[in-house]
Image 1 (cartoon, one colour):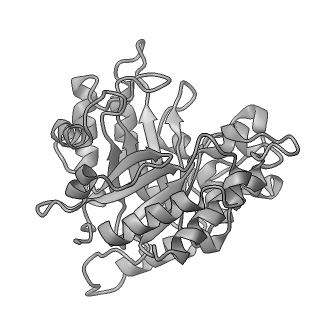
Image 2: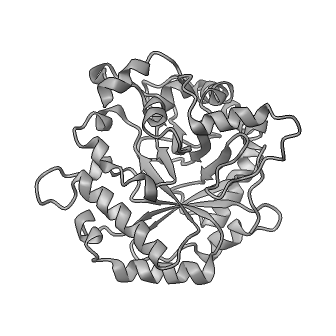
Image 3: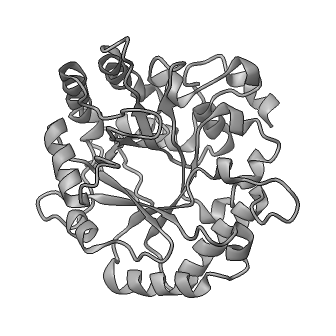
Length: 344
């Protein structure tokens, strides 16, 4: 599969006319086309959603974190990315208030790891069914609005390929399928499901990589979580990372275009690390996003990971004044302001 995909690796974003991209381009050509709207799967008909995981690892409560981040960037977010684990029920009251803000409603991207104590195989076998059913009951009573849901994001570095581990790639796919189908059986029909990959070439080169995918019937969007490390210089290099040591890998966006031509792509986490020797790097990078994002029409949501103490560095977007101005211009760009968030 990877060898076949490598043939398209010469183009920056590739001109492949996927169904999602074709529909977007064709709509722009229709005279008197209706106002931009979101589909049942929360795909914006124009542009892309703009979102944040705000002030992560600062200890700030979610409302304070989001309002603070929005004030810092001089714009509001379409999507709020939040994280839950284990038996936690979601959305929380604070998340509900943010989603239902009468002045500025927001979509929720809920990132849930169902358990740290059970293997994927055990979850697929029903070990957490009571937990899933309790969550389903809570969602039915509390939150009928549509929301994004991803399960155990970035599974690649948790895979244990040894026989009987319960954490093989096929176990992940079975776990994901089981949780989604169980939620649906229990009446949860408003979850728009997202399969989130790490977006790194080294994991994509693993022989089990393709086995992670749970199936089109339980995945609505596909996502990646790329970060701008020292070998990434601009947005093109972020979403289509390649490495000399993995020569057959064409880049994640190109792979997603070919592997999932009918699905929207989310950049569910992205961040730009501070470079002490190059204080202008963040500004230049944010400017590259504004110039280059339209080359990737299948990307329909861009969610920044804003943290002064992310595991590998500072990804706060306003670590210097120039970066802050460039990020604000990006956040206010018409491309991210063309489709209104559906109101509850």
